Length: 249
Image (cartoon, rainbow, N blue to C red; front, side, top):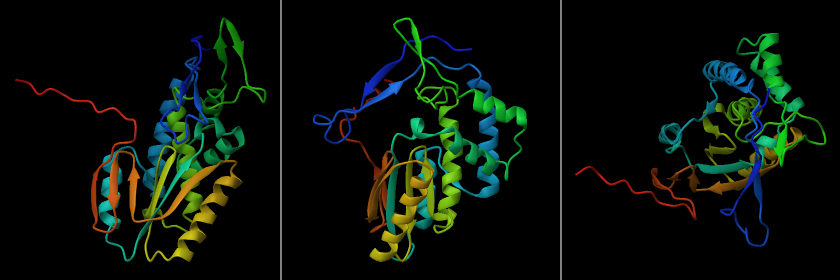
């Protein structure tokens, strides 16, 4: 069962070179109601996976700060920062299936759970009174769906597991589509080799990423972390609006 709310787009006017190459994000509020059930299932699975597999799937800035405090004094460390390009719409049915098969190693997922998770990805767009579906079928992880964030987190855990073959789990983490690693003893050659292997893992899964290697200072979420002095401070993205709260008198 779907709601029939009309889809719309938002412009990514905070991106570099927006004037010459404008990008937009499709928002589909026509939610598949079974996504509510899928969200609950996925939350339980993700919590079990994080605990048993010891993977850094961050939920907040506080989680990132605690991680940074532990690793900031490593010997000659460097950051590698990466961003998964168009993560939500790039998740295919086969990629989600591989992520679920990995999750089964750490959490109980019944056949009924699996059917609910996959069925919740059936998606339709509604515009001007008509229903539309993607050319390659109804499977889609949509922005604004009930379980979209949890689906991305599940796939993110699977990707972290693959990266852990050459970057230890405690040195790397993900927040949705944003990733960050601290590499100790970071020579230029070593960091470049890790960069290439990370890119290849995502490419093998049909995903594209942008990577910034060899950073001593990294802006991540809403903080700036500095490996030169071990300090961190608030970070404000360009074009973001400051909100002021008037204290009670």
